[in-house]
Every structure is written in structure tokens, then in C-alpha cells.
Amino acid sequence: IFCAAQALSRVATGVLSDICMQQYNWARPYFLIPASLATVIAHMVLASATHEFPFVIGVTLTGIAFGMVWPLVVLIVEELFGTKHMGANYMFYDGFDSAIGTLIISKFIAEDVYERHIEKGSDETTCYGQGCFRTTHLAVAALSGMCILTSILLLRTKLAKMVYYDGKNKKTSAKHPPYNKRIV
Image (tube, rainbow, N blue to C red; front, side, top):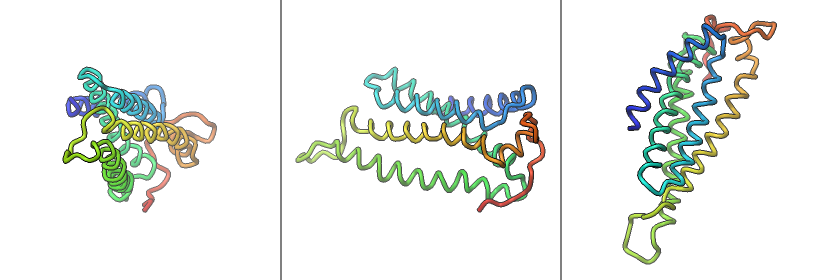
């Protein structure tokens, strides 16, 4: 379910963001806001899921959100910084944050929450029940809420205004990055 949802979402997001940029002059980072909102909703559903159906909904929404983000990141990095150092710039946004986020969320938060919910004094190493990952899902939902705020802030930066708007606050299409810079 996750794979199918994210695959369809990747295609739909790429097409919709292109259409919205060309026809309505919407800046592409606006699409990060619904992607982050979908992640918040998905992890709130997963945090409270006690039956199969909400779990399926949460996994599907997570796939949709995941599929929305990664094509957008590639396109936004290219639009903001150009193609000269695309690999290095993209890996800063994808490789660096994925590695650090995976380490912090998977190793420290999820593992700690899981181990705290294993019955004390038993030989069990398996956690049973809703509490095993609830706090982890809530933490991811909170981080995704922060993504909504940072997406809004991105649209207010000088660089984004140079790329997505002309000098008169009139939206333009992002066909010409202001410069080819390496950010790392």
C-alpha cells in the first residue's frame, strides 16, 4: 500500500506542480505544505490506530506524503541553486537530513519508546499494544508540523523571492535560477 501510494503521489505531484507553476504561477515550495500536512495527519492516525482500517489509512497517507516530498525536493533544489552543483546540493537536502533523521528517530526515539513499553521483569523482548510506537508517531507528527512552518519561511527568503517572484512581488516561473552555487 505504501509503495503504490508513494509511486502514484510522485507522478501526480510532479505533474500538478508543473501545471500550477505554468498556469497559475504558484511557487513550487507551496506544495511542501500539503505534503507536510498529510504527514501530520498520517502519523496522528497511526498514533491512535487500534484496528486495521485506521492503520491502512495511516500507511496510505504516509506513502502519499513521502511520494510528494522527494520529487519536490529535487525540483526546488534545482530551481533555487541551479544545476551546476545539483548532486552536492541535493545530497545536502536528501542524504544529510535522511541520515541524521533516521539515526535520531529510529535509533534513539523509536528504540527508547519501544523498550520502555516492554513488560518489566519478563523475558519478553517484544512490545505489544498501541503504546509501543505512539510517542514516536507523535514526535514525527510534531516534526512534520515544523516542516509546515519552515516551508512557509522558505517562501519568504530573499533567494526564493528572487527565483519565484520578480522585483514587483509578481509571481514568475522559476526557469532561470539566480546563480549556480554549491551550498555545502
